[in-house]
Image 1 (cartoon, helix red, strand yellow):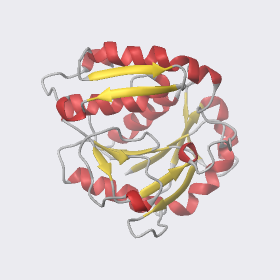
Image 2: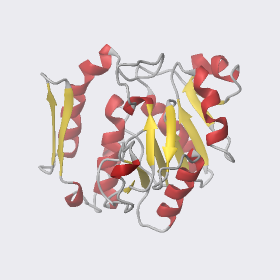
Image 3: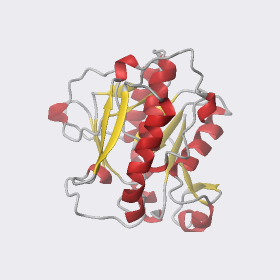
Image 4: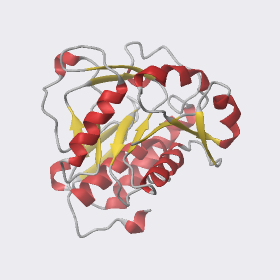
Length: 253
């Protein structure tokens, strides 16, 4: 499995992953201009050519292309990991979770697996789902032709989830492990340096991108809007009814 971390402006976080990803050695997909910053922290770096901010979808696609070219599964991980706990509440290595997702994919007809953003093991049912919106902070991909839509930018994970449902009928969403990344941290007011989350430009993009996603699929079962007073995206997606295997989606990528 090609284990990758998509990062922006957080070279100091390299050390967080040394132990938790053993026996894997992660490859850091970072903007080309930041290569030396990450290498100085001991990271193995795959430099991604600079693109218009935010460029995470380009980093993700570079990782998928690299791993799939060797017929490998690809794990894509955010750069702000905090913990991973099993159903018994025990802290475990993130690599255990990745192996779990890979095993689930190997035994299924699906091509992407992830988690729901549950950070408290109390809420884990112990039964994984085969539909829904897998969080983009940690996913595993089986070789397939789909790629992240670079025009979806900050909502590239939502768009990929929809694409996986349309083409393959679903994704595997873990309900056996609880993961926490800084984006779902206990103290949302505590900010980290770097990353793509929380930037003013990000907030301005949301409404435009939600409309793009809705127009792109042109499906009454996919409805997106931006709740201006609250400042967050609202989605109404009938995940179980999206499968359209006759649609290759090639025109979108």
